[in-house]
Image 1 (cartoon, rainbow, N blue to C red):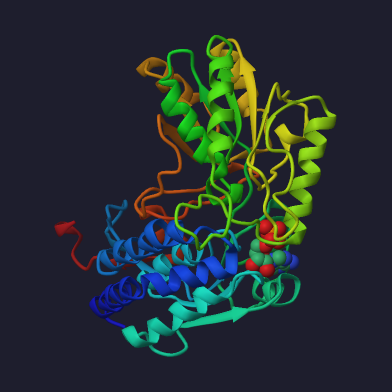
Image 2: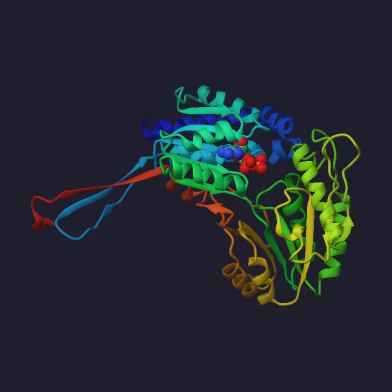
Length: 423
Ligand code: ADP
């Protein structure tokens, strides 16, 4: 397809999505349990923005003319990689779909995408809008199926040329193995995290409290980049813990369709039980329970916003990804110490830094091993900002200009020059 038509389809799709914003947000809330206001006012508009961003790229992807040694004309062609296999999780069903479908289509690929078994609805709805936007049938193929069957089939298929996966680190390992055992398709992995937030002595404490709160509790704590280890300097520690506790106690939990609700239920019974068992482990290992610590009522998978202080590095709640509304606050004394402790994790997805000192911010930015560093903010997720992990948080980057290379093949073309005098 000509590049301008590709771009037009993506723009038309974004317009249709904007028109259907509220229905799509409602589907997201039904499926996932996230607050409707969050889906309608934040997430679906982010998806629309992302498709417009990649619509803008579709006719700006080009190769280079390369000044190679010798009498040759050398150029590179950036071609679509072919069939992209994409597997997405349930925590941000449509946003994860967008991160994968947007760049793949902008680069001219076809797609086989599998939604998570818990959350198939929004992707089904919007994929129909793609047909309305003019995408030819067969370009975007959607499967709603189980991981070990449908998901594994995509990973192993000899005709799938590229794989992009977002999910848990354990499943990421399986996916990589299946890809390498079949046709060695390149794999992008966006996996788990245990992201540190560092609140320095000179930080604006109210700003840090509010950001650390949303960094952890946003989306019921079900974010791969959740700020799940909050390190606070000893001189401001007590004040921070008091305010973090007060903020958690104010958090509005309930029916996600109700106005003003900040936190809905967890995704399912499996996660619900897992989170409660981590909370028990925190209590048993000696962390101080400041707020929450239990489910809400007896109906539905609601969990009280839970805050632990006096968390130690070797506790399970400080090491494992809980994926629930459980904030852990740890104490530190020096910058060198907190850098070492923050980096002592098998993950490296994101980090937050709260300070008013530019030198402290620069030092931490360089020292922390994480794919995103947010300074005096957290969870800023524009389409143009690359996202991905160090270490066991994954391979490669999604969003921004960086995602294009995931979906392109580079072909070098070498032609001898007939008259080298004009080299
Ligand atoms: P979670 O534990 O958060 O549900 P998973 O990593 O298991 O995360 O799931 C993320 C996505 O990976 C889902 O779409 C799921 O169906 C898929 N998946 C799970 N197991 C496999 C597998 N063995 N092969 C391919 N995909 C899988």
